[in-house]
Amino acid sequence: MLRSLVGSEMCIRDRLRDLRTAILRDAEDIANKYLRQNSTSNYAVLYIASEKLIDLVDEIDNLRQDCL
Image (cartoon, rainbow, N blue to C red):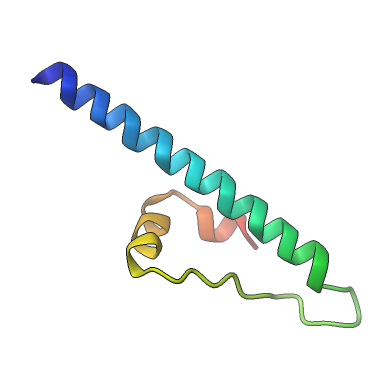
């Protein structure tokens, strides 16, 4: 039982890390495509279509801040 719990926690941690990487990559891609100094706003929107995914994003430390 304990072994499966540890394995599950490692799996969750790995998935959150993968989600963080994907979101940061997408945010950088959006910034490179759509943000132009002195031409556009300094901010863009990364739309996440699922409330469950947004809840996961909120669990990742400093992710929203790192996207700025």
